[in-house]
Image 1 (cartoon, rainbow, N blue to C red):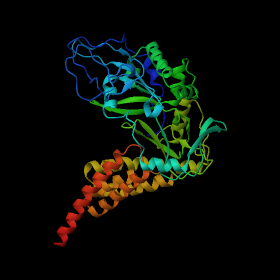
Image 2 (image 1 turned 90 degrees about the vertical axis):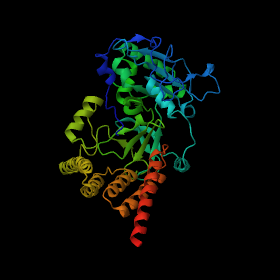
Image 3 (image 1 turned 45 degrees about the vertical axis):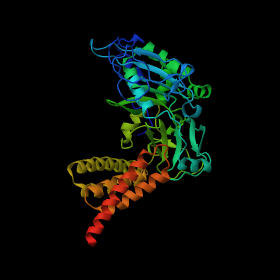
Image 4 (image 1 turned 180 degrees about the horizontal axis):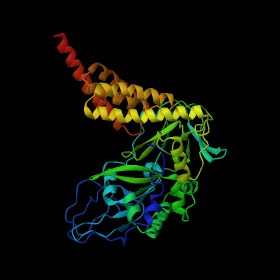
Length: 435
């Protein structure tokens, strides 16, 4: 997922379509609350009013394990569609202690907030060994002036391919449901307060980001710096706009050397290297999907970010540009064919095309994350009945996730489970053949 404002100011686009909102009301008595006050996923039944997820720190019961908010939540609610529908309640929640004092302001529905709290996204845990090993190497990057670009992110030391370069947390996390229904002046007032409630250091960092040409401060800050992330809840995933103040400093490159992964479980954006990066080299990320052709991406960058891309790929020779365009078209075509073959049960064809897709991505210098690629191959070989190669790639995937050292161990644990299952079946098949 490219770190980019794919909505590219859904804030402004939705303002003209905004529905009437009402001040902070809760559902009438005897209606069912769509969330549980302690932040769990169960539905609270027939309460006179809907309590908010979490509690206020100064008033909290210390025996409760629910998160404590540092300010009284501020809420608005769009009108219900009918007399039996409980309206969605959008609230501003701020925690200044999130991630050991980093801080966060969350503007989202009470249901989504309950989900985030309930799955432990606000819990601070000891970093895995991979993170500790990277910290021992010293900072991987610094934010410095870059000629013609203002500030940018530059490597301070050699960065290995596949290494996590940066881990960043959201300063603001805003549900698009709120953005699409709140009146413009309600929206701006709420987001301005969300910024004001952040810890001093983080608030200064947010206000120091580059700004777009929008009239109002919050729109000007979010426009060129926000990106979209998906947050799960009971009824599926909801798109959110996230402002990651450190990662927002990464400039665009049509041939990037890093890409991003967002963990909902840990509310963390991890930036990892496509290729090895040398000290002093600028760290670049694509603001558009990597398979977008040159003319389309240049137009998009101009329309949404207001600059003419002058990267090496856009200004290179005709042969270089045509070669890259061919590679990217081929990657896109192969990816679609692989998914189609997988869905139709042609696993052997999908395996062959996966190898070809990997070659083209290597040639264009945007290879996939190795353990993800090996996970995919392990699953394809297993589905094709080849337990030998399934075991081989499952082991490679597991070893890769261990070395990767993400703050979110979900992929690692899933890989461990898959490997154990495949190894057990493989050993059973060998024993059967021997007998």
